[in-house]
Length: 108
Image (spheres, rainbow, N blue to C red):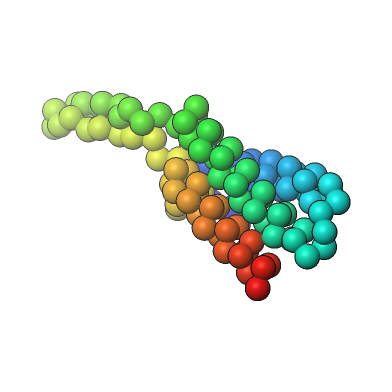
C-alpha cells in the first residue's frame, strides 16, 4: 500500500519520468558493457532533477500561521508532503544515492 501525504505522488511521477527517459537513452545503441550503467545513471539523475524541480515549483517553504481559538496559541504549519513518511525534498537525495549505487555496481 502506498502511503503519501500532500503532494507526495510527485515523487512517483518524477521516478516514472526518469524511467521513461532512461529507457529512451538506453535504446540509443550504447555498447553492452556500459548500457546498464548509463541506464541507471540517467534514471537517477533525471528522477532527482525532476523531483528537485517539482519541490521547487509545487512545495512551499513558507509556513502558514493559525491561531487556536480556545488557547490563543499561534501554530505554524509547513507543507508536510511526503511519500512513505519521507519528505519530498529528501527523495531527491534518495534517488541520487540509490541509482548512483546501482550505476556503480554495474561497472564492477
